[in-house]
Length: 513
Image (tube, rainbow, N blue to C red; front, side, top):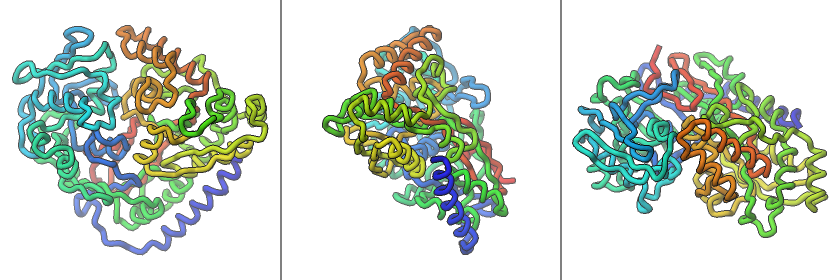
């Protein structure tokens, strides 16, 4: 199977290289001469509002356009003041924050406590149609205390609150948002970050420029490059050709063999780095997608887990710093552990025996949904076919697949999750197994353990409870963690760019050489 993976992937690389060699020169609209950093990806966020999309491209836009109350230094892991200058726990369920003065939104509105209270209270309402509910559902409400202070009231003790306030919880301008509504905000979004959005072009991308009035003293500093542009280019070969010919400056998720080819291209730099993103198979254990689904039997789910050669996929497809994952989380997150977690080594004979024991000696047919890295999904399908399981691939855009999964219409989902770059297991395991929209299992025992871990103020107790949940998830094979993602970045050699494990390209920190 590994040689098959290599052969298929290698032919793709040769085709891409041929395309690169034949690519005609295109007008240079990017680069140092125009002080415009153009980056491209294959996915367009369904909505530019950070609370209304969960695509990584949307997360990247958020970090460059919106500020958060707290900043976590990616090098030291320490929390630093950002829009909040200080904070204190009044009690285990009340967090008080003092806000920074002199901060201006991109439209000229002054930042204040009303903006914080409005943002957090709004995204908790059903009317908000918040897509990223898991990032805010620990809050009960937020109140204005005085002209410089807010209090966040929690539903229950949640020690990870500071981590979330340093990540996927940007602040909206209350007056402007109330006036234009969500639809208007999506077309002309406003934040306080180092870049301001100048145009949202559906199907094409987003244009930004450095915010001249960005507040001094920010821990991230003012943007060093004048203009930033995100372009949606679905085809990988087209992205590579535009990079080589100067139409764009930066791409990522370049397949490893194609990254090797790009290393020989003039004026292109290639960088590889492991990320927090984890690929995994999620199983419809309740049988919502298919009547009498084989996946309701844990032996079938265990058979699938034994059937996939994850190490071969890491070595031959993902490569770089990728690692096999055994627990349903990213190993460096607080509370994530694979100690004592049942493991599934590659053993197709054992997979066939389990299938026979479960009453499927000749296998069965099933659907498998995926939204990215089609070759990874096809490799999984090949492994399943080898033990008699015929999986039919349904390849969709992320938002469409997510809605089908939530609606109980997908049997096996090839998922990836970057945890919104939150270094806490609640941002991964809690999303998929704590009873929310993404939970296909709804297992009371797992939910109880995760809830206990989330609410424990003692870090040691949190770890114990999370370990209980992770062992049960693996033992029952509710999901099969595959591997961490190693991303290949390729960019113009004129650009100084540093990758971080949290999969957040900080374009405001990039600069021309």
